[in-house]
Every structure is written in C-alpha cells, then in structure tokens.
Length: 99
Image 1: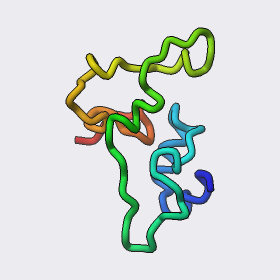
Image 2 (image 1 turned 135 degrees about the vertical axis):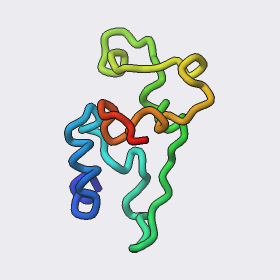
Image 3 (image 1 turned 180 degrees about the horizontal axis):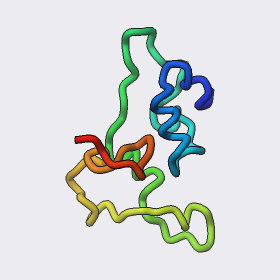
Image 4 (image 1 turned 30 degrees about the vertical axis):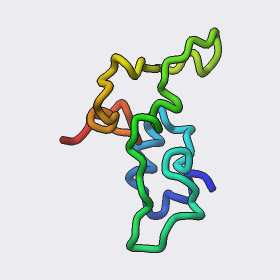
C-alpha cells in the first residue's frame, strides 16, 4: 500500500524515514502487510529481530551493484547476541538511539 498509507497516523515515523537512508523502503517491508493492520487501539506486532535487519544489512560481496555497495555487517562478529535496535533507530539509522 506504500508509505503514504501510513503517513496520516504515523507522521513522526514517516517524517523520520523520509530524512534517512531508508527513505525508499516501504513500511510494509519491515512491518508486514497493511491489510493485516488491526483496528485502533490495537497495534501491529513489530519484528525487532536481527534476521529482519540482516535481510538487507548482511554484507554481501556482490561486485559493482547497488546491493554490493550497501553498508553491511558480519553477524558473527558485529554484536552477535544483541538486537540491532539497541544501537540503531530503524526509521533513521543515522539518528542516535534514545536511551
């Protein structure tokens, strides 16, 4: 359904992602299909697992391609027991995490 569908109720997160390297990623890529969004006041479950982030941020040795130039990590050496969101704010990973 695209980011515009989320904007009316989630403007802060929409604004954050629009100022970030994640600007072209639709909300549904991480949060699941909008059609499954429950009615208010319930919330959608949010996947905070490393495996979700690694779908894009696992370092791949692709030659000159967009995927090969993306910043990636080695999950065996980059804080292997921690969830990514402890240090990285997903809507704008250039912004410091609020602790």
